[in-house]
Length: 95
Image (cartoon, rainbow, N blue to C red; front, side, top):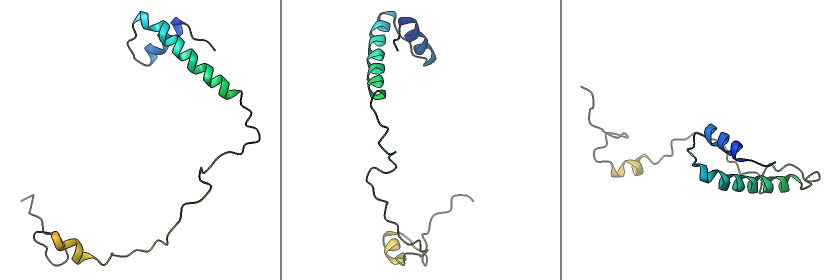
């Protein structure tokens, strides 16, 4: 596939990119180069290669999903300026 100036101008219009006339030839050459690389990749035989679902080949370790409170309320509230019981005390915002 080869792109000409008219196609590059149309692509720029669709992408809402302001493209100067003198840059259309340069951009056409660059896009044609990219399309050439894609055509080379399409020529590679991948028929014997299975689809890749996980690049590492391993599943992520899973932990048991247990609900708990962490039991660290005292450590969490240690730096609070004015804790009340096991809660943060904040100033009233709405009166």
